[in-house]
Length: 148
Image: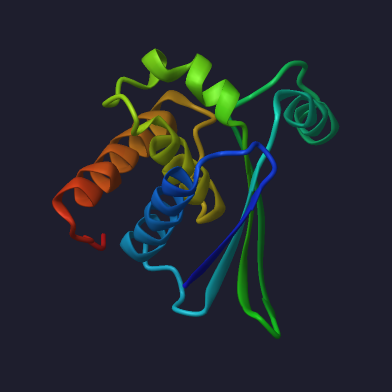
């Protein structure tokens, strides 16, 4: 499994490394293909606002957007693209209810789950995603990976 990150937001090396690990852990935990490739763009607020309006028809900045592809290529099986805005994540940190410094991982796991078919459009789906994100973060802290 490969995670490619375009760091347009200027996130530190340690944070980028942790983000990659979380994405791979979420992919493994959900049984993604071994040849899966995930692309993550870390964006500023203006660029994220533009994407949110263009693809979701929503005004304002958001923390994460997921664009599933789920198709084969010469590089492997393209899972899809995530756009993450670290500034939006930092602003909403307290809403996530996770340990300080784990909020980007929490949001990245959320995005990966969307790419793998999870939906949070209703309360049941949102609760299911939230529970699984927290399980993935717990696995990261414990240094293990649990498949469903």
